[in-house]
Image 1 (cartoon, rainbow, N blue to C red):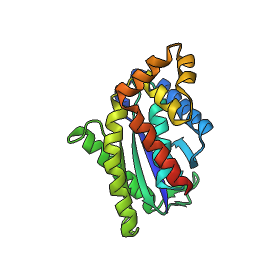
Image 2 (image 1 turned 45 degrees about the horizontal axis):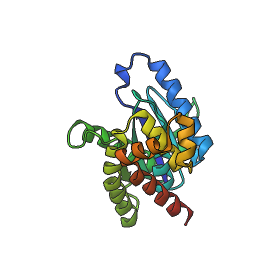
Image 3 (image 1 turned 135 degrees about the horizontal axis):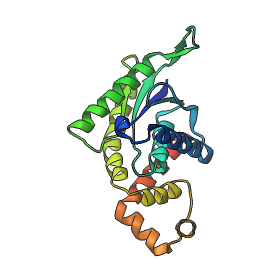
Image 4 (image 1 turned 30 degrees about the vertical axis):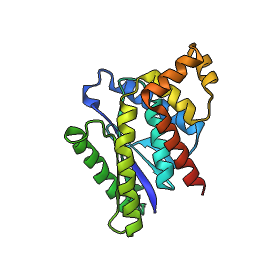
Length: 215
């Protein structure tokens, strides 16, 4: 079992420059992979505004998605559907096509988070679905992840671009002093920005994901 991930751009049809948005997204994905390579198959454009990638574990996928959310600038947001299950390919004249229960679950997940964003949870951006073929433990892990993600997405969604950069830096191990120098602001200003945004909970959650991935 792996975590298949489908990503799409929120409100892509309303963007004034769709091509520029794609370039920015591609650059953010590349930056995250340089900083902390986590994907078995790095997120790549497929069709329209979608990207697809594969992670070895749910923890790796959750960590990688968080880093990408934090790396994106204001005005560009993504939705993430994670499918837990087997993945494979189907041969075709244009090349191998991704297929399998993991991808079907990822498609269901991104449709689910889109629906939740429209109604019950406007800040929701990420959802996990386990394939029906997986055991009860995998389905339980998906449910627990979704409870965590609703809160995480709410916190990250309320951050401004600078605070996301600061939070990204803290996730990757930068000190507040380092971040202050990079931003051209004081260390107390960094501390205040992170505290006001609730970033410590996001950073601690990221650290727990990485410990889980290493165990």
